[in-house]
Amino acid sequence: MANSPFTIGLAQLFPLAAQAEAFTSAFSDYVTGPVSLDAEGMARYFFGQGIDLWLSRLALADEKILGFGYINRTGEIARLAGMGLVKEARGQGVGSGLLGSLVDQSRGRGERLVTLEVFEQNPPAVALYRRFGFRETGRLIGWHLKESRTGSDKALKEAGLFEATTRPSLFEYPEVPWQVSRHAIAKLPPGSRAFSLGASLVAVTNPEAEKAAIRMLHQAGSAPDWAELRTLVSALLGRFPGCRWWVPPIFPEVFGREVFQPLGFSREPLNQFQMQLAL
Image (cartoon, rainbow, N blue to C red; front, side):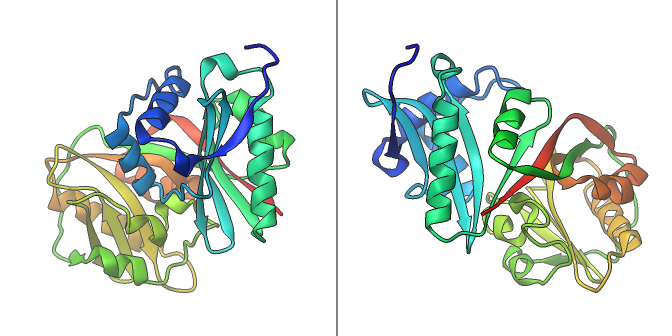
């Protein structure tokens, strides 16, 4: 399909199954490993990422999806929540054309900022975003706990997920990624829970499962109290000693240095850049 033309279409007009097929093709050789979604999985992805299909766009040729750019809009901030090209569309200018269209539309809507996260180990994607003027604002590091542990959890209090979305925090979007902000917590799957200690709060996926993810750390106040956040996470580990904990690479690296590493978590091999484009 060298030099073949393409058009930009509305994602909302295409069936989930067709978008899932394109998503699976685009991420079949992804840096984190192959990703495979069906229509139901695609719907869950849209929900969890807060994606607005009516603002998202597809690159098309003869009604075939060549690429996708999924947008999450929060107020006057747009987040490129997912972008990819099927293999046969790469190197043809499709990615640049699609990204340019998304940025132009964001600017036309009066948005002030476009944010995204991209794996540092994905050089072609990083280079594309840099060419469009996106700049790195931080590194996002993932962590995991190799062995379960016990500890005191007496000070740990359960909080509702809705409460977690309404508490003010020192760590607000877009300074931190959308996925660890209060906006994303409302989209966590069933079984997810939140716990508090002092001025600090943590939200996690189902801690009764064999493996769970820490998805948010919030704290009220005028300056971070890292000791209290460490105590909070330590108490969480003590409350659920049989759980294997994972921290996805969506937390700024200061959280690893101040919270996760001191508690015995090991760093994940891949990390992301947090990037922003001021409009």
